[in-house]
Length: 390
Ligand SMILES: Cc1ncc(COP(=O)(O)O)c(C=O)c1O
Image 1 (cartoon, helix red, strand yellow):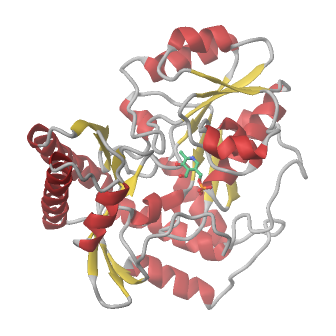
Image 2: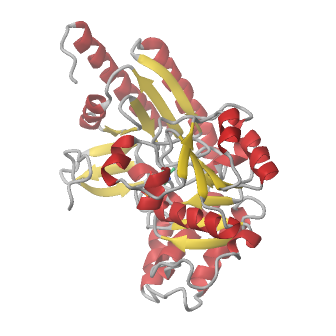
Image 3: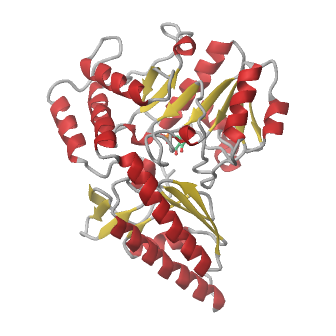
């Protein structure tokens, strides 16, 4: 493979629920969910069954033909998406769901400009990358897509100043994930909604990381009672299989004409079977409430660690999308935690990010906390003795 992933020295072989095992049989609590994908737990039996059944029937079916599994999935999806967002384009990844949103906004408004926020992450294909903020991702690939500009996050005055006659859409993650698990201040998303409606600008929410129950609501925008015009989804939507979805109101999506946008895999029946089963599992197992309850517990205990360790600056997040900001580079903490049987993600250089499957057990959260406690203590001792690990 191209050398573009920061590799950990672990070969994963098997997973069940919130547990994964490496090829030597060593067990880990998985607080990464493969970057938020394995939200229902690894190899959920209902997903496995749905995939196996569909694989024996029909794996591929171009969207130029109808397919019952695709229809079944779309009907279930549009029952749970926020009111009015009931037309979908199906793709294969988060970045693709953002690409579609950007094209749709330009097509529907006949205006070119997209506003995104500093600190945003929307993916790494050229359109999505142009809306992503971090220089280290952008700079080697200039020139990017023109007319995509950034404003400071959580600032309604700056948003208003940036909006012009040429603005098609304002694109924002309701909670910034890669940007360090940043929850917006009360009133920001509501204010953006009002500004966009007043100025006839489309509001796009990128819920690729926050969507599908992760934050303790089906979609994070529901914490603030705000409905966007276009919403991007991916990651966990198909129980682990690749799927991106861009949903929009009918009058917006209908501006796309035949041939305007496509991908060969759009609405692939195998993926749709998994996604249809994933919606059933999410609802039947009450996982959204579980994310809220276990997330509140996890966050409170992380806050206890903050009170104990002077190198912990802040604990942030909602539901089971949590972050702990520390005063040092987290790489060594991630590696030491993995050695002790807990997989944790980063979100930037100094934020530990927790995105466990929503089926994680309380004991597994407790194990994560006790491993983190001991690793933070090691870090502190190493610093006190003048030999920080990195
Ligand atoms: C908010 C957000 N948007 C878009 C993406 C890109 O998704 P993908 O990696 O599937 O292209 C990500 C990935 O982390 C994300 O967190």
